[in-house]
Length: 53
Image (cartoon, rainbow, N blue to C red):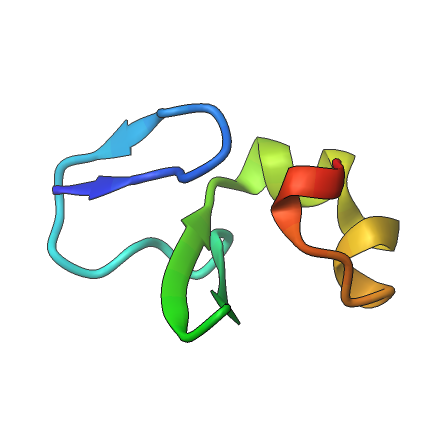
């Protein structure tokens, strides 16, 4: 099961769907669902840590 690190939404597979995004923050892999990814796209492109958005 994969869980969005921002909102807690879950996906019942081992690998997240292609619409989800992944990042590495402070050496830890984080995963964001498609809704959180779309809502925070500018912050992600600006390389802001998720704690800022």
